[in-house]
Figure 1 (cartoon, rainbow, N blue to C red):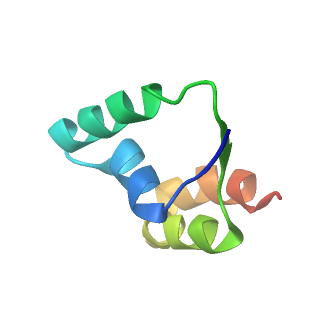
Figure 2 (cartoon, rainbow, N blue to C red):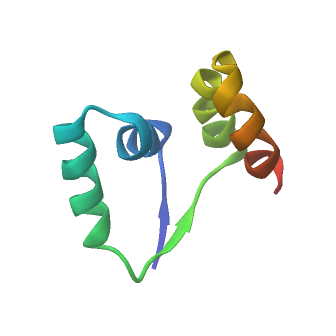
Length: 67
């Protein structure tokens, strides 16, 4: 099964408030055997916050920019 992420799911899972982050990760675990897919648009949307923070920008943007 192939599942497509929306940007809000990734943002909640990685950078959400603790309760929201835990809930999101629990829901994602239900589909652990799926093939996860993100589009270039979702990747770009998720880089807006990290790009504004220079600490995260240096760590995340080169890895996330790779296809």
